[in-house]
Image (cartoon, one colour):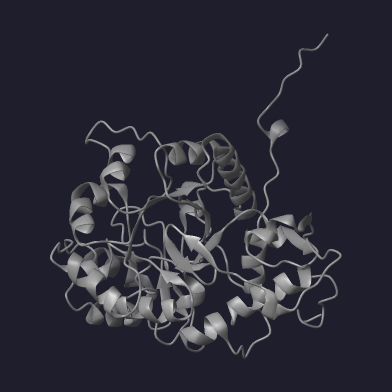
Length: 381
C-alpha cells in the first residue's frame, strides 16, 4: 500500500483581499444622518475611523492639523525628514523632481542625515499648535534610542511600527526593545504594529499594546511582498487579528482596537475593513493626493530609504484636491476615491449600520466578480 504524503501545497489556506469580498445588504436601511462613526481611540476622540499613515509625503505638522479638522487623526514619522531637517522643504522638492532611475539613491542620501533629537519637542509642539494630537510613529530600534525624548516631549500616542512586529524579537548584535517594560513606563498609550498573525497580536496585547496595527506589505508604495515574499491579504489578516482581539477581551476584560493599515484606496474598502473587524483604518496614498500633502503629488514607502534593500518605492499619485475634499467631499469622481467618509457613511446607511461596530454584523461574501460584473462599459468593453 502506498504511503500517503502531504505537502504544503495540499494544505494551502485561502486568503482574501478587498477585491475578493463584497458586503451584503440585510433587512434594514437607515438615513445617513443617523450614522455615528465616532469612537474613542486610545483615549483620543475620533469622529471618523481614519488615521493618516506616518509617511513623509502625507503627514507634516500642518497636514496633521488639517486632517484633524476633518474628524480624523494623523501620525508623524519619527524617522522621517521632519525629524532630520529643520526645514525639509528642499528635500521634498528634490524627491519630486528626481528622475525615476536615481530617486532611490536620493532617498538613501537624504535619509542618511541623523535624527535631530532637538526637533522632537519642536515637531510635537507644532502638531499641537495646528490643532492635532501628537501621534508619533517609529521603529523599535528608534524607540530604543529616542523613546525617552518622545515621552519627555509629551506625546499623546506612540505607535511602534516595524515590518513585522512580534512579542519576542531575537537579536545577537544588540539588546532588543523590551515592549512590556517600555509600555509600562511610557506614560502614554503605546500602539504596536504591524502584524498579520492572530497569535502574535494576542501576545502583543498581553504586553500592553493600546492598539494593534495590521498589514504587512499591502500599501500602494510598499514593495515588501515583492522583495521579501511575505504578507497576508488584508481581509484575512484583519479578520484573524480581530478574532484575537475578541478573545483577549473575553480573557482580560480589556478592549484593544484593531487598525487595518495599508491597501485601502476607496471608501468601500474602508467599509469592508470595518466589516471584517477593524475599528479604524490607516491610509497613506489617498491622502498623498491632497493639494496640501508634502509629497507634491508623490508618495513613498517608509522603507524606501534603505541603502541596501528598499521595500518601498516612489509612486506618482497626482493631486486631486484638498484634504477636505478627499475625506469629506464633495467628490468630483465616481470611483469612491474622494469623500471617503461620506462613502463609509452611505455604505453604513445602505447596510442598516448605525456605528462602526455595527459593521461587524454585516454579511461578508466571497465575491470576486462583484467589482466587474456588468461593468464592461466602464472597463472598455
